[in-house]
Image (cartoon, rainbow, N blue to C red):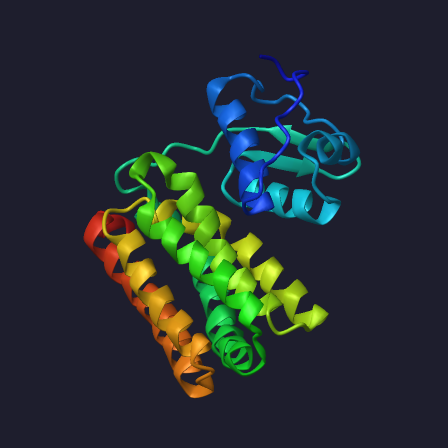
Length: 242
């Protein structure tokens, strides 16, 4: 199989997940060489049998998990995520204050978004939202990219369930910005289960249409994440680098 081999037409399952999985697997196997340009959006949509909206969500997920990069005016190119080494997350956090700035933004807006979602969600929103939790809980360590993608999708779906285009754009940007942190932190033992537990509490409040409960659960989730980042950095980074 080569980069010119047609992709398999997708069967009924979350389309963004299925398309992202096929592309990721071919990059990991070497069928699509690192640095190779992916086919155009039009060609990929035709091969997968999906809409451009679904394809772009797949590419967004692949970019946030480190499997592709988009070059404006040129196209989308294959790459591989950088390996996670012991202590790399702590060192990365210590050298890049951006992660704490991003969490400051998330703490300011995402609890309110979760509260709105609890009030405005439709029954049709619950299945896809719960499916992301099931996927995170059920995947094995080798499925780390899918765990990362499902984590981001959970937060995206909450924002999109409100039906406000401005909120949808904001939540998309926030999740894209956090791709590197999410990929690294969810690779640390115990962090996926912590996220699953938190997401379950948020989902339950949204399902009950409990505005205050959803807002508080999201705030606690983000506060716990910041506390964990600070603690992990102190425990795993040499004192002279802190």
